[in-house]
Length: 250
Image (tube, rainbow, N blue to C red; front, side, top):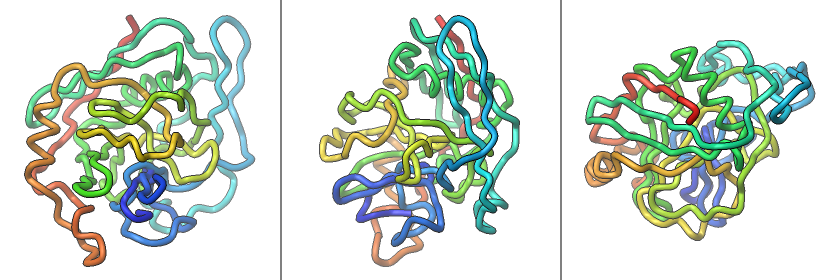
């Protein structure tokens, strides 16, 4: 789902481009065309809650019936604990077919997002999944985190956006969404060039500290698009597979 080029996880919108995940509520583009959005927005529904130290996170399971594409692409692994650590750092290690990518994450600035990725990694949610989207004009991102590789996939739950003051510069990793509030999920994008024209709508998860050369290799290969109106937004020609993803708190 693309709005002139930016994605959400499944693809969202960025001023003129959208980084989002695929959703029937997003118009224009293809399922893989939105860099930052999730398949459907979070709405009223059952939520996990807890008390104690740390921060309470609201992971919401939407109650509306998803469209057929989203339903088929959703991977149910449950819902994370509501209590999340809100201090220190965490490290996400992506073992790919092209080599390792390491992301330093800020548990203080984005505690619920980091806790969600920690939970999903522990459930092997990302293992053996392809990065499904590459954009090479307007915005420059590699988007991953959809087990179905369609742009519609993600877990059953959604959560609110965090850490929206950091610019989307080269190496920054952010979470795609549907363009609706509290629609972050599992799809994420790596900025391989500065995307300073992106609106601050996507949670900044962290920064790549190792492996940007791998992202550059994929970007240099270009994209194969199924949409003639968006030839620079599609599936990476150089396939990159997340063979294993782990998260550990420092």
